[in-house]
Image (cartoon, rainbow, N blue to C red; front, top):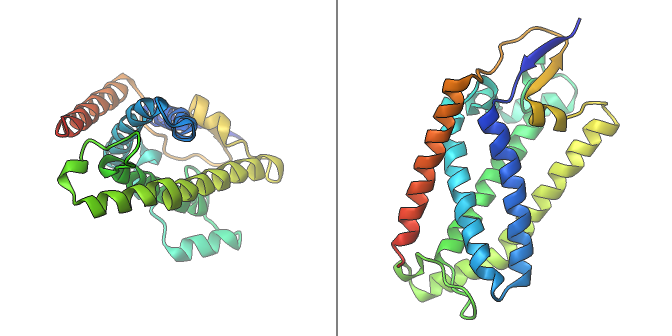
Amino acid sequence: MSNKVRVWDLPTRLFHWALVLLVVGLVISGHRGGDAMAWHARLGYAVLALLLFRIVWGFIGGRWSRFRAFAFSPRDIFEHLRGNSVPDRLVGHNPLGAASIFAMLSILLVQVGTGLVADDEIAFTGPLNRFVESARGLAATSYHKQVGQWALLALVGLHVAAVIFHRVRKKDNLVRPMIFGDKDLAHPTEASRDDLPVRLLGLVVLMICAALVAWMVSLGG
């Protein structure tokens, strides 16, 4: 018997797809350079606001969006690779997927952080560059344009490949639940709360995070 369970609350789903669009925009604008760098910066600020939101939401969001729901140990990952995961570890992010999520959030935070203090000496200077030494700003720029960019693209590629693998080999559609929120599970389990108060809370948290980023950017004015 199938049990339809709300796994992903609306704020989490909107975060996910907004981040996808922003990362695509960042890649395009970053490679175009020139006048597009102004938009590259704006998109980067938006990503930072989303990342701050996701960190907060990882503690107060829906049941399966909280970090404690997918803070797995290396042993959990090993057992998952052996096919020994318990059912509850397959509801939201499985152990291997959880590792990639934490890696993605970490690399994005570093990428945005280096962008804030970067100076390519051509078309872009980060709003917080004046708070760091010139050598640090140049080092941040080098990381941002080389190591960070390719590390992020590699993780995105792995994420897409994993989604395709689950769809083709395991007949598990990971995209649909991230659009509609629900999963059909073989066993009953606790659902994520996703009512109006939760959604309004998500909006308030996002607005606060956006205001914080706007203030941070204004420091370089």
